[in-house]
Image 1 (cartoon, rainbow, N blue to C red):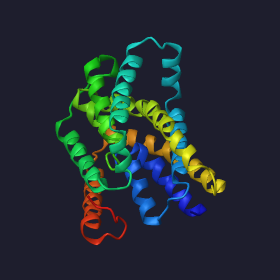
Image 2: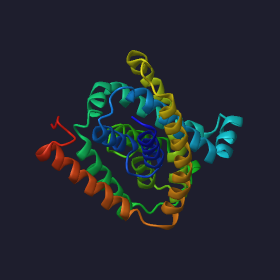
Image 3: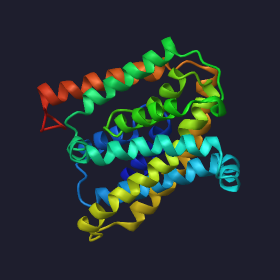
Image 4: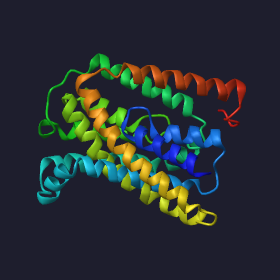
Length: 264
C-alpha cells in the first residue's frame, strides 16, 4: 500500500459507509483489485474510526440530547435495533468472516439494488422516530444484521427498513445514521482479536493516518449529501450503480477470475 491507495480506500470507506452502496463491499472489492492483505484488518479498523468521527460530527446535537436524557424511547429503540444486529453478528460470525473473502460480493450488491428498488416503490411513510414501534426497531436491526454481508449496504438497508415501517425520509435517515454509531463501535470491538492476532508489524502509519483522515472528511460530506438526496431526490442512480457492479463482480467470479479466484 502507498499513500495514494490509502487515501483512495479512505475515500471509498467514507463515502460508501453512508451512501447506499456498501462500504465493506467496496473495501473488499478494492483490496482484491490492489492485492492488499498485509495489515488490512488494522487499516480497515482505523477507517471505521474515521467514519465514526464523521457521524458524531454531524449528529452531535442529537447525540448530546440522548446522553443528557438516556431513559427515553429513542434510546430504547436504538438499543433494540443494536441488540438484534449483535445477536445476528455473533450467531453467524463464521459465515460473515468467510464472506469477507469476497465469495458473495456480487450477490450482495444485487441484494442492495433490490432493497433500494423496493424502497423507492413501496415506502411512503411520514412518522417520526418517537412514533416508531418497538417491534419495528427489531425489524430495522434485522436489516442491519443482514447488511454485515459485504455488498449489502448498511445505510441502504436500515433506511429502507425504517421507511418500510412508516418513517419519513428525514426520520429514517436520522435513525439509520445514529444507529451506525453502535454498529461501527461493535465492529471495532469484534475486530480487536483479529487485529491483535494479525499484529502491527510492517504497518505504514503514514498510510493509516491519511486513510483515516480522508475517511472522516469524506464521511462527513457523504452524510450531508445523502440527507439532501433522500429528502429531495431519487435513489435510482444508486440502484443502477450497485446492480451493474453486482453483475460485473459475478461475471468475474464465475467466468474471468481476474480479481476473485475463489468463486462459490
